[in-house]
Image (cartoon, one colour):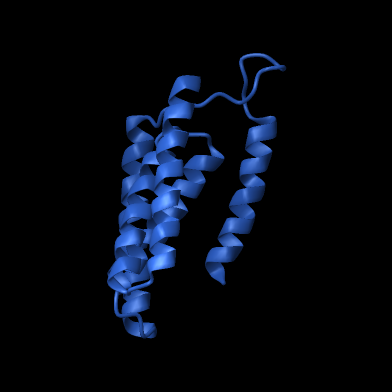
Length: 136
């Protein structure tokens, strides 16, 4: 439930940023930008803290048999969604990794329709990355 609350608020934040963010002129759309080194390091540190925290929660408070894999995809999704809200190009790369790891988890569970869905998400993320890179 907490994750859905995060997604609700980050979606509102993203909508606000995309409609009111800094542009080169008032008629331009919000530009795609690349992550800078400082932000990238901070995001990696936050990802690591989230991965460990969520992993410990899943390991000790749930019956998940893949707590670290689930935690990885959840932490990555949190980071990628924030990056999307800021229109950062590399969010697509995070989604590709998250989707492929999730696909592997679904394969190991024999959840083949969901595996196919996440492979499709991966393809969409690759296409999105190249589209945004052209816009950059």
